[in-house]
Amino acid sequence: MKDFPIPVRSIGPGSQVEDEVLDYMPMPQGMETFRAPVLPEPEQLVGRHRAHTALREALTQLEAVCRGGGNRHVDLAGLDADDLALVNQVLGEGEVSAVVHAAGDGALGVQVQEAVFAGVWRVVTTAQGCVVSDVIELGHIPEVLKLAARQDGDPVVPRWQGGLPPNVQNAPTLLAEIEDQWRLWRPGQPAHVVNLTLLPMSVEDIGFLDHHLGTGRVLILSRGYGNCRITNTHRPNTWRVVYYNSQDVVILNSVEISELPEVAQAAMEDLEDSQERLKEVLAWVEQA
Image (tube, rainbow, N blue to C red; front, side, top):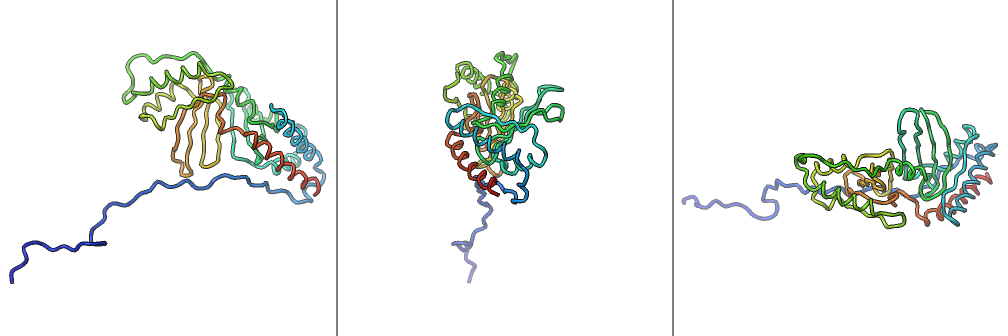
């Protein structure tokens, strides 16, 4: 018998060599939620009267903020190391932190850390490594962040001269739109968001845009579902807002024109919730 002239190959599942591997984008993991602070043992609370007074005053001021708005402060000057340690332990660390870089040698820098109670902020001002002031600030966002951003804002916009760098196409038009928006924006108006992720922007376009917007002294990090990095620019009321998932992959890249992006601010509902939570914690601390 002669060989069959047409080669016979098996078919069906498993009979073919699979060279391609499905590569799915990792899903975000780990969402920040409220976690009650780890409270000290009762014997550690003995004699910490100044810490008790400061925390009770913080609750009183937070209640005033919930009723009438605005920001209130509680000065922690005069508390010794043990009292400060108790305040730190009760407040804990929340999901928003910020820094205002010093403008030059000898200038003041600011470090901000939100407590586990949204809208309760620890604001420490330093000069050449020494603490100048240490306060608890109650409100939607510490005022120093808005003030520093306003000081950085420069309405004088330098124009690009000559030909554009390679692969830069859409950034100049976008910069003109952003300039129109920050010149028109007024306090009380909704934020204007330019979603760069949805636009045909090359890496060179992004670099060109960031170069002309500049980077200011305010850096805010918000850790909720993934991370959000917020920086002010050298243009008035103009912020760069970049969201990352838990794998540190950029999922949203934007420019926001507003006094300060809402993602970093505590909402009124958060302040009211913090008031109740802080009241419960203080009741335990004062009874211990």
